[in-house]
Image (tube, rainbow, N blue to C red; front, side, top):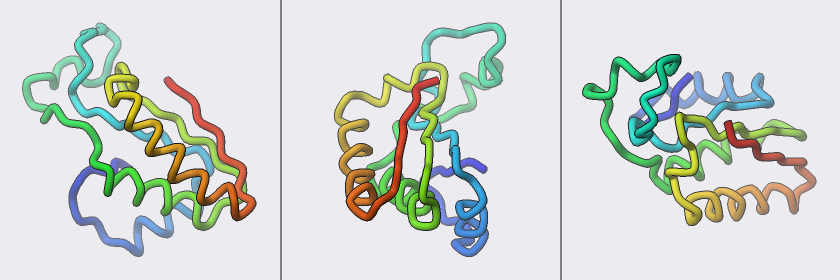
Length: 111
């Protein structure tokens, strides 16, 4: 399931988030400039809007997954997930710390 800056049925999202302990989150969309032959978006470069996940969406994704999970591992994915920038990941960790104070165990991985 992909989370973009659009409205999606909240009940469907909540049900999905309760069952997933390792979400793969793509914080940048179409910003990667590597053009790897094996990449699933290589043929879509001209069709994809180049943007970064908004702060509002970032916090919503973290809250949705952390609310019902005790242990969660976020995989930050997408060609080059570091294109989201250091401030993006600082904001993600800040949002996650709120949940860690409530006893949640959260890990982050870059892919």
